[in-house]
Image (cartoon, rainbow, N blue to C red):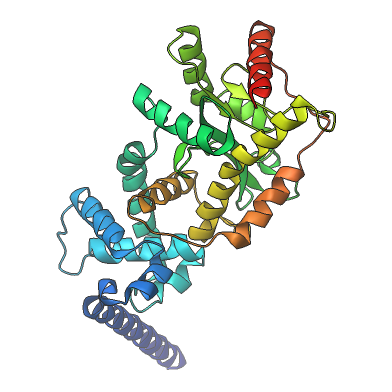
Length: 363
């Protein structure tokens, strides 16, 4: 008798728990169906999603076009999927907390699936459209002219730098991800142009990798070297002292004398290259999932997607404040290891030094 009574109590508890879960699913479904984030005021909308409504509609149309048609009656709509993912990118919070928002209303397992689906779609379809190295001669001339007018350094088509994105320690080879600042991260190399647009991103390297190593094995360096060897371009990037001096990458001089031509070059170089620090700041302040305060459990694809979304915000004129993050990025630059001097291949060293000397003489 006691055994029968016990099983009856257990079954009642299971039925009650199942009823509560069903009730929660019903409430979430009603909330999703009754709310429309596009009805929010513009200022509040941009605060929540970090994009304005025209940019959101563009992303929604893109996601709808590349999303499989819903077969189930209560399938998650592209509107809810996009809202949930942008909220996560913008706030960098936990999935459970994001899912409980009124305009999202997703269970954590459902949100995890939505996040994977949207990131996969955007990474494969959106990134290649919005992240590209300047290819045409007209585009390179426009960018170099903008840099020259503002800073006096000719033929600059972009600036590069590395930035760390904190992650949860991976199960395998986690020592490779432990960076010099004392936490686990990805070392992400970015290249930007004069409009803070990200032209190249490589988020595939662990945090212990040095900037010069990432540069040396990057497709960007291979592309610029090929152009140099084929004499198709006479342009270069600007990088800090963590990168090697090459004919297509100008770095500052080490320990120049006060008031010398070399010091003037370094001052102009620093002012011009500051735009990559600003780009890092805007990127991380807009998409706070990349900030050091929140560790990512996810793949580098999230970094790539955030860079593409950052670029989309530029033509749609979605602006954000970046003062909080800029100081962090500047501090990161100051903490570079001064004892590690990247070496330039002998076949390129003389050409690179001549270019840098000519630039310094023209300032």
